[in-house]
Image 1 (cartoon, rainbow, N blue to C red):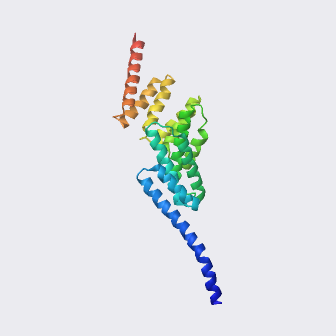
Image 2 (spheres, rainbow, N blue to C red; image 1 turned 120 degrees about the horizontal axis):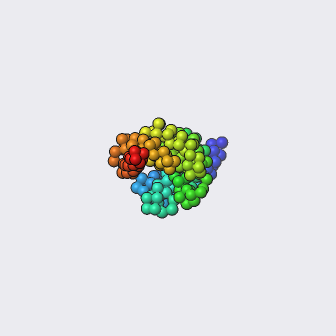
Image 3 (tube, rainbow, N blue to C red; image 1 turned 60 degrees about the vertical axis):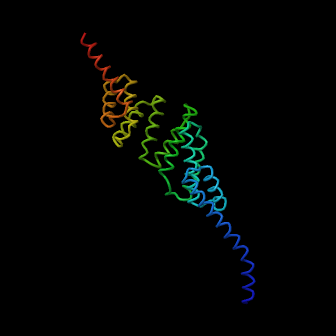
Length: 235
């Protein structure tokens, strides 16, 4: 009996060694992927994390590493004005797979990627329909003011001015340190001919961000317009 057991063990050793080899290779690839990601070598990181996932597609850490690698590469591409839509698409795909492995993992990062994906999609095609992408982003992270802001801009472009205005107002009430909403809500009022309301919002923004040149400029423009109106009415 003992002899038969030893024979069975001997037969299993090559199989075990093979399995351990692949596990070792997978972990080694993951380690190298993390090192490459840490220094911003995104292409190498993508290659190594992909190798690790070839051995274990449900490896949470390798999947997260691959998603972050595509995120980093897309972000780097945008900084030098290169096309990034395909990279954001790949990053979003990896985060979506990651959510199936661990539903609690990286929801805010996934939300951020969806925002960038929507923005890159609009940059390529201003008429593209991205409200679904932005709604999913907001569902993943209800504090993502960037996605709310972009959604409001899209709605404004579609002529849904009241809905856009409501979102801008919501952003400022919940996130008063979000500068773009002051600019965008002021622009919305200005385009509607509501000069005093535009001045109110832009001047609030200047109080919050006294060094913001854009808000200072448009506050002055609105102020001058209101002064001219008073002078005209006094004639």
